Image 1 (cartoon, rainbow, N blue to C red):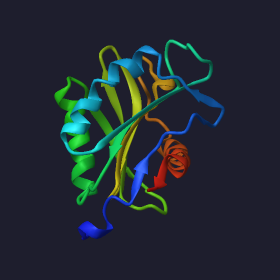
Image 2 (spheres, rainbow, N blue to C red):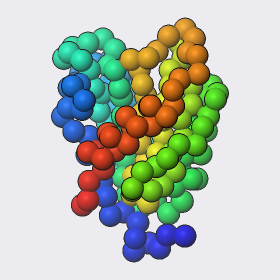
Image 3 (cartoon, helix red, strand yellow):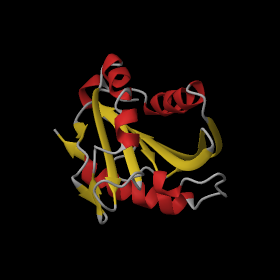
Length: 167
């Protein structure tokens, strides 16, 4: 169990670039997800959003990171609430897995989600400071076979290592 004193030591600060991708907040998916920032703020967290594309102006980014930071006392509950939010928004979740959370700890799950007519892999992590949803939008298609969640988790851990920084 985490004490309040240990919670909230990190913030979510998406980098301007990641693994050859550049942050491009001007693309349509990033703009559409920006509305979620209000929900994050209402929950008492500071929102953070990044969309990473191969080229500035790409219609569909390769990766979208949506999340926030604050004092989170129950990371597993936060991850479950994020999946429930996807369900409430009309999406479906399948093939959910528990994945390693790395040296910062917490809870990490990956799954395939349905967003309208397409599916894509999504990973969510939460610890005592941050909650982040990584949408692997570059892998969207009408059907997604069971993805290599271990590989996606390694990519997520690499992103987390540069995006979750000590306050």
